[in-house]
Image (tube, rainbow, N blue to C red; front, side, top):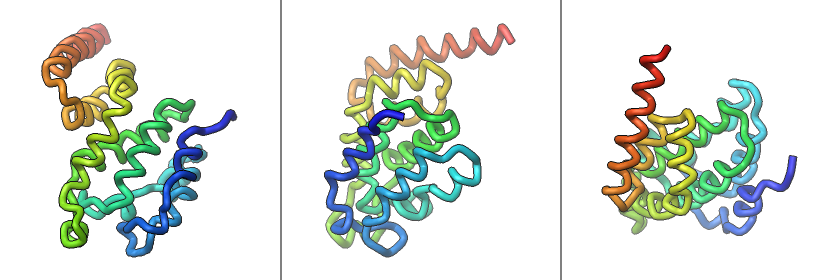
Length: 170
């Protein structure tokens, strides 16, 4: 296994200064994220989940923004299928959720918008995910993050058509 740039990215962030959904600071997020990347079984993936940290019932916490950056980097890496799907699911949560009321009170009323901006850095990776087997998760993410609605509509029509043709063949 080579160097994981997503874990290098995690080292740049002052996690102790960030609010987490578990009620602690985000100091434990890099370790949890690393465990998720290394998970190989469903139980390891479940144990390394970021639910309850980046969000509680789709309500986002401050750590979601840098976690979005880690996910964008990790999607470029060689990952087991189940881990990739979990990361996409977490990314969808980050870009489609909304700030927890405590975050609104703390001055962060639009965490999802900040996550969307960060996720745009991975726009072509997300289109590749859409085209190569993670269609619906990637489509929902792109629907939230791609500022170019004309591009999204074009790719969406092309990719939905491909998916429909593939389903008809089977």
